[in-house]
Length: 598
Image (tube, rainbow, N blue to C red):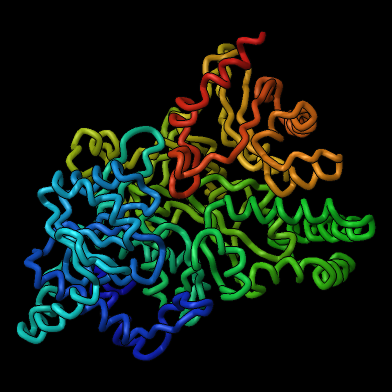
C-alpha cells in the first residue's frame, strides 16, 4: 500500500478501478458484478450521510452484520468519514452486542436486518451514547431511532451538495496515527477486550503481505466468508482492495463448498475447519468405494506425497516420479481440485493450528495451503509460509518488517509497526501485553528453527500440567484426533490429573454410513453416541492415535458428545476455536466422572 491511511487507499483504488469489477455479490442464485465506480459513489454517500447526522471525526460506529457486500459498504463509508469502526460478530448474543456498544461508546450502529436489530432493541434505553441505528436490509419502520440505508444515502447526497469540499477536507484530516478500528477479542480466556488499531498499522501490514506473497495480483478472484468483524477477515478485505483483487462473497458459511465450485477463486483465506471437513469427506468417500477405486486413490496419494516432499525440499519432480504424478493427477487429483473450483493458486490458513497431515494431503493433490499466524493485537499476521519457502507443521517466517523473539518460558514475542495502540479503557492490560521494549507478548508458546520458521505449540494458558509434572500441549493431540474421518471435534483435558481424557464429537455422514453398514437403524447422532458398539469402534480409532504419542500424552478415556460444539452455544469463537473455559464449565462433570471410575 503506497498510501498511509485506508481512506486515501480506498479513494485512490476507486478512481483507478473505474468501471472494472470490484465485488461479486450473490443475488437470486447468481452473482452481480459491482464496479469500483459504484462502490465509490455509494460509500461516499454513506460517509456524507453519517456526517449529516452530526457525527464527528473519531466517533465510534459499530457494524452488526454477516459477511456480505453491505458490511463492506458500511465499513468503507465509516472509514471515509473519519470514523472508528467497532464491528460486532453476527453470531454474538444480545448481551455481547450490548457490551461492545456500551464499552466503545458507539454513536451509530449498522444492523444487517430485523433479526440482528432484535438483539439490541431491548438495550437501546441502556445505551445513551447510541443515537442512531441504520438497517442495511429490511424495513426500519416502527423501530425507535432507526432508519434505512437508503435514507442515509439520500441525506448524504443532499449534504454533499450543500457542503462542497467538506468530504475532501475530512479525507485530508485523517492521518496515519488516527484510530481506524476497535476489534474485540473472541474471549477464549475471559471477557473480550477492545483492541485499538490505527490506519498505519493496517497500511504497513498490507504492504508487508504483498512483499511476502508477491503472486497476489490485480484481477484475481478471492472468495470471502470469514467474519469481517474478525481482524483476519478485515485484513483480507483491505488487502483485496489494495491489490485490486475481485472480492466474491459466499452466500453464507454453509454454502462455501458449493460456492467454491461456482466462483472458482484464485485465492481463499480460511480457518482449518474447512480443510478438515474436505479431508474427512474425501477419506469417507474413498472408504465407501469399491476395491479398485480404493487402490487407485491410495496409489495416487502415495505418488502425490512423494512429489510433495520433493517440492518441500525445493526440488522439481523428474523421471518416473513425474510421469506417475502426471497420471495420478489426471485420474484422481484433477477431480478433487475441481470440487475446489479448479483455479486455486493457493489457500491461506489461520486462526487455529492446521494439521501437517492435512497440509501435506492438499499439497499432494496439487493445492498449497500457506499457513500463517498472528493476533488481533497485531492486525492478524505475524508470520506466513511463502509460495517459494514453506514447511508444513510451521506457521512460516516473520512478515517483512516484523521481529519475533522467544522468551525464556517459550512465549512468542512480536515487535513491529502493526502492533496495536492499546486495549480500550484498560491501560493495565495494555502494559501487560506490550513491554517497555515494545515487544507484544502473544500468550502463545513456540519455537524458531535455524531457518526462521516458527512452530506454535499451544496457548500459554492452555498448557496441561499433569499431576506427574508433564507439560502437554493439547492442540497437538486434538489435531491428531481430528485427522480421523469419524472425529469431527476433539477437546483434550487433564490439568493436574494423572492422565489425559477427551471429549469427542462424531462426523455425522461418516458415522451414519458406518452404522448403516452394520445394520444399526438409529439415525439420531446423540443416541448413536450412547451405543456401546459406537464407543468401542471409536476406542479403536483413539488407540491408533495413541500409538503415535508418548505414554503421558495418550488419551486414556473419552466421552462422546452427541453434537458438535457451536458458536450458538457459546463454545466456539467466530473463527471456530474451542473456548476451553466454557467447555470445561459446561462439560467438566462428564470429564471428572471419567476419573471417578478409577
